[in-house]
Length: 156
Image (cartoon, rainbow, N blue to C red):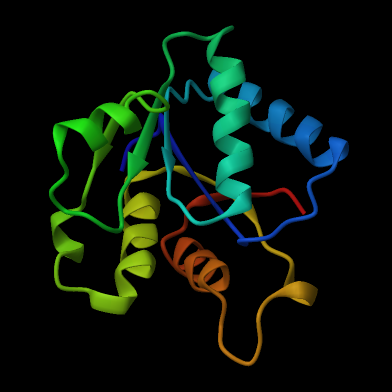
């Protein structure tokens, strides 16, 4: 576990408001300035992740030392072309070896990987709008982060 790493996870669909954007900017800047976070881990398939990537990318202009890392849940081996495409938005990308045989659980396992590597987790979880009857991937990740005693920063 490293104190200078933060991951993001949240619902696929979110209510993207100016208030949410402002709150995220404030949280991310505080993590960089006050907590010396310099690495941000991102997953995929979530509007929340996309919004956080956009904000971290904008903030990177002010704090060029920060790194954006895309943790893949698919494609353990990628072509140079795809890697170069990803590196247009991220400083690095990797596929966690431990999820190689996860099958349908690869996204859950990828989230566990991001949580394990992070000290801070910025989370968008809306219990009222979570998918039912099954547990949402965000709820599974949140429960895991709580179990692992991570610093959880809720934005909802």
